Amino acid sequence: MAKKILIVSMTVGSGHVRAGRALAEYADKYLPDLLVEHLNAADIASPLARLFNQKMYETMISNFPELWGRAYKAFDHRVSAEALRHISQLQAPFCKKLVRYIVSKRPDGIIFTYVGIAQLLSPICRKRLDGVNIGMVVTDYHGHSLYNMPAIDRYFVADEYVKDELVSAGVAGERIQVSGMPVSPSFYAKRSVRELKTKYGLTNRQPVVLMMPNFLSRDEVEPTIAELLARKPAINLIVVASGNKDLYYQISASPLGDRSNLTLINWTDAMDEFMRLADVVISKPGGMTVSECISLAKPLVIINPIPGQEERNARFMERNNLGIIARDRRQIVDGVFKSLRVRKRKNYFGQSLERNSCKEIFDYFLNR
Image (cartoon, rainbow, N blue to C red; front, side, top):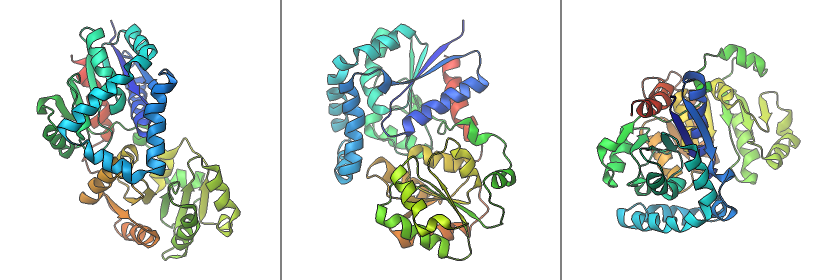
């Protein structure tokens, strides 16, 4: 009988769901005999549970980022993390429908990609599902103390450094596997960069810079784009507004909208194509964005990291010469052209992240 694996994510930011989706896509493509379902817990959890996990996070990082950073640091200790783990159990009465759904599936294995929902559900799954194997994908480049959960059988982390941090947080080393980060198989498909440049009308030989400016202040977006386009050597600049219509119309209505070497995209489902085209990427350092840049060996110019996990991701990139943290417009522009001068790069992990992550994660469950 085919094994059943349930991947449980939650829309708290986008990275947790993207990691879950990457695993599901891999299984669909390479493991047809494995029954895999990707569940976004936000689709089933009660409104109160969604409010606590999703809206609280969005409100904090948007309006009180420094407070979020201090809380992140405060709970990165065994005692405080243990206290918060017990407090999280108070949400259990609001997740009965979600628990019933998971139990009804009778999975052989569960993979969590969001620590908040894992803290809540992993003890319940351990009690209600005999013999289930429970895994936790750490989707950032820091082993925070909140990940220390007794009900988790296996942790999957991107790097030895993250493993060492989890061990310091109290997780036994034999429960941690350095697997790499799960990245969509689309990032490993063989594609012709020349054909992609033709597809998007980039017919010159100028280097390509990909920019996601959604988290720059509105009064900084146009001057930053203008300075990038004014510097020499000339570049092709692709700006993806990530569905922010106000930002998209702001740029398109400005004099910049007529520049022949500026490509403006409101939304795309083909981010792998644009990242493949790019010689440099400008973006926030979410865990999945960092991993996608690493998978394609693209240097990242890091803007506005959220205090806490994104700051840790940014430090990881800078420490390993994979990115540059830019704190203002001048540093963004300088970082781009500094990165362009170093053209030949290799994958940080030395091999395909697809092999390191999705395959190794599923191998663990298939061999149990």
